[in-house]
Length: 127
Image 1 (tube, one colour):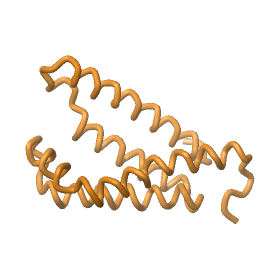
Image 2 (cartoon, helix red, strand yellow):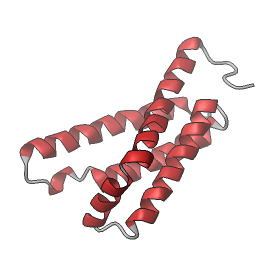
Image 3 (cartoon, one colour):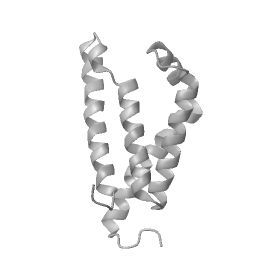
Image 4 (tube, helix red, strand yellow):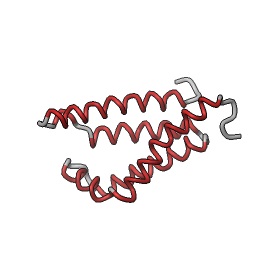
């Protein structure tokens, strides 16, 4: 049974984490494909369109698994990998000359550290 042995607060928290990934996927895969692919190409990511859609697949699979509480450990690991890869590609703060942009991307990187922490909390087995 899905969400078995979860408190109401744990269910709400898990759905909130999943919403981050499923929601941004819905926006990015429908309205931001060219923009992200162009940024990836400019950063030297090989096969940017293929890499972008591979990222979307990771985001979709992991997000749905966490949403449905189906193999949540695996879904969380997939989303951790996605978050680390997306951070490495899109938030290279050290390459930015503009102090405001550098600060913004560093802040996003710190937020992503917190997201990875939340995903680790969803995992139900000891590491």
